[in-house]
Image 1: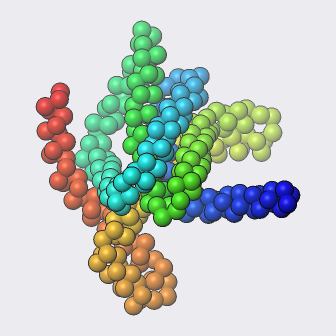
Image 2: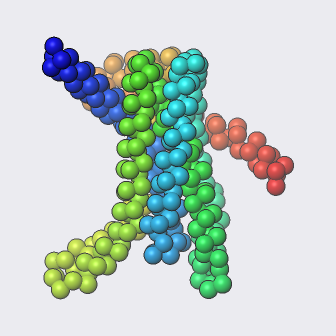
Image 3: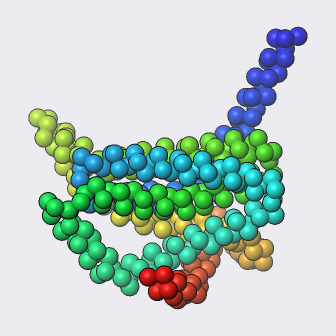
Length: 304
């Protein structure tokens, strides 16, 4: 009897883990846009830091990120238990924020590109100064990265909560915890790899083997383009994911896009929903930026 009970328990645990794995996989797809943006932003945060201090800075931000999620996961489960009606509005808010942030990044690139470049040049010049307080620069970068991570982590948790909202509290907590840990390890592991990839390329380029030298030279050539590509892909994904969340919450729009895709059929039935969600996300982001930017600027002036 005891053996049978143990087997039953093991079977229940295995079933639960299988469900957690399935829900985690779905959540990973839904949060792809946020992950891409999170990865790009955090890799950019290390720009200007001395090479020997890059990994310690990433580690400090990763610890702050995990602390953020230790706050957000229990808060999300509490909301699901005490205020379940709040899950959908939070999910819509997360989708709207993705679209807003994505469009803001595009607008900033075209409208304030020179200002951004000037800021980077000022930072480089400050770091060349031997009297510059590098520890203070690091602390500010870490604080800024952790603040940004809190917002992006909140989006990821909100999206994941929307996926598992109908599950038991135990399942919700398990999935949210797994996603939180996986996201932290994935994002900051990749960030560490990206910021150190040029060191790897330099190491290979100095080997005796001609093949390794060519690989190293190729890595050194590729490294500067990786961040740009990651930023572009992450921004596109923000519109796709954010727009998808919004259209799912606005039934007429969702049905119109899917109905048109069904009429077209074939490959269009697969591509049109994705493109439609992305276009809706782009339009929503533009409207949100136009409406909120004056309010944000006014708030910044009052608190300056």
